[in-house]
Length: 343
Image (cartoon, rainbow, N blue to C red; front, side, top):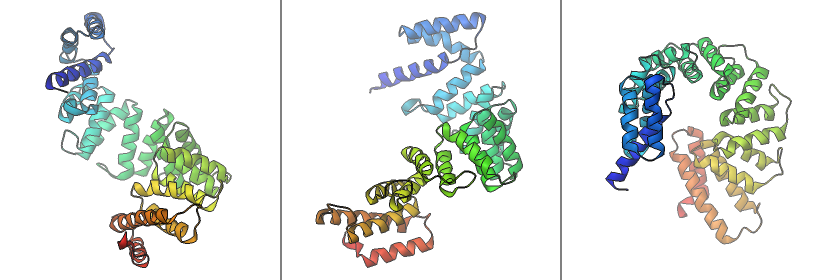
C-alpha cells in the first residue's frame, strides 16, 4: 500500500469513528447527517469538513470515539499519545467511558508515563458514574494493591457492582473472591454461581474454574462430564490451564474415553503457551507412549520425530523462568537419561 492509500485509509477510519458519535442536536446533528451522507457516497473530504468541527467544538462523545480509533488502530493510524490526548479532553468533560480508557492508559503506560495513582483516580471517577468496566478495573486495583492500599473488601464491593451489571470479567473476579474467601466469607456455592454467570457469557477463565469445581465436587455435585464440558469450552479458546486439565482427563479416562493421543494433543497446546506443568507432563507422557507403544502405528520414524519434540519440550522447560527448581532438575534428568542431546 503506498503513502496515498495509507493516508486515505487513515482518514476513512477516523471518519468512521466520528460517525459513531450520535449524541448531536440542532445544527450539530445537521453537520453529523451531512457528514454521514458524504461518508456513505465516498466523499471523505466533505465528510471530514462536516464532522471534524464536532470534535474541535468539544463534543465529548466524538472526542472519546476518536481516542478509541487511535488506541485500537493498526499501522500508521495507531497513536497512543494521540489517543490519550482525546481521552483526556473527553474525560475532563465527565465522559465515563473516556475516564475509564484514560485510567487504562495510565495503568499500562500506553501513550503516557505509567502512573497507577492516576489510573485509580480516573477509574474511580468513571466507576462512580456506574461504568461497569471501570468498576471492575477499580476492583482489580484494590485487589492487587496497585496505586492504592490493598483492600479486598473494597475490591469485592466494586466487583459486585460491576458483576450485577453483567460484566463477565467482574463476575469471574467476584467468584474467585468467594472461592478463596478474600474480602468475603468463603462460599463455594456462591463462587459456582458467579463462575457460571461468567462462563455462560464465554469467559474462558470462569469456564475453566467451573470445570475445576465440577471435577472436585466443590460447591456443586461432582460431575466429571460437566468438568470435561467446561474444560473443553475454555480449552478451545486457548486457555492453557483448561487445556492442561482436559489433557489430564483424557490421560486418565475421567469423564471421557481414555486416549493418550488426545491427552498429548491438549498437553502440548498448554505446553506451547509456556505452562511448565504441561511441558513436563507432555514430555513424560510422550516418553511413555514411545517406550510402551501406547499408540498404534507408531513407526520408527514417528518415534524419532517424537523424541525431537520431547527434546524441545524438555529444553523449553529447563529455560522456563516460571518452572520450579524441582521441575528444572527433572528436566535435566530426562535430558540425560534419554540422551536427548542427540535430537
